Length: 239
Image (cartoon, rainbow, N blue to C red; front, side):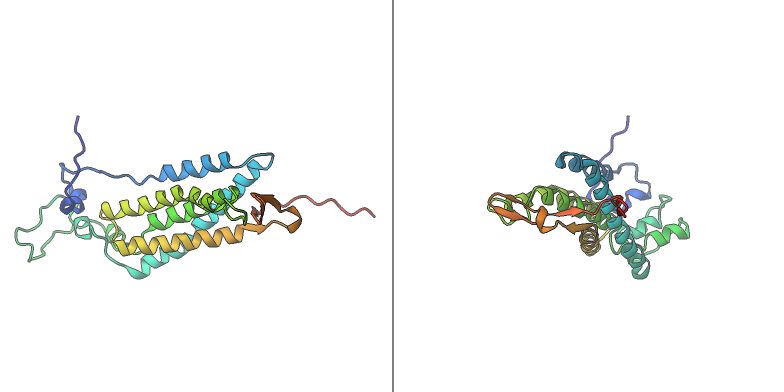
């Protein structure tokens, strides 16, 4: 059986041109994002409202991803920046490059759709989508842990959101290592994804009334609660 060989960095952009010695060395962990989006909220919530809060979180993430797509996709088409592997995309049939690279003579063997895809480098869609999914999840977890309270001993709970942001950061780095994006594309994608996540969180959360606030660690915790996916039923007035 053949074994995938890690490509030297200078040859990674050519691995899609048919080089049998170079295989995929990195897979974007999309399933990891999906699994963590389900597992951690279920473990964080307790009581009869657990399912409602998980549904509210899922809707908040969908809103964040939708907002991110509305900003990312038009920007890709307007910018039209070349991906790092653009030349390799035009040479998918395996035709070797010229001996004298100063000539820049290549044979194009791809369709127009593949050429257009090669001009969607800025910003990174994978990076923006991963941050758009992970930022609401991180905020949800730290909010449930009481990290935004005013009592002593609550600040360390902010670190509970770090693993989710690290996953999104790792996905962004993988896009550069795979020669799909430049660092400026990844940075722009992260900014867009974080903005979409914060906006979706703000639109999806409502403050807890003062009468419902509780005290933890000696201070008042002004948590937000998710807006229910289904509005509560109101009883008709008694005449």
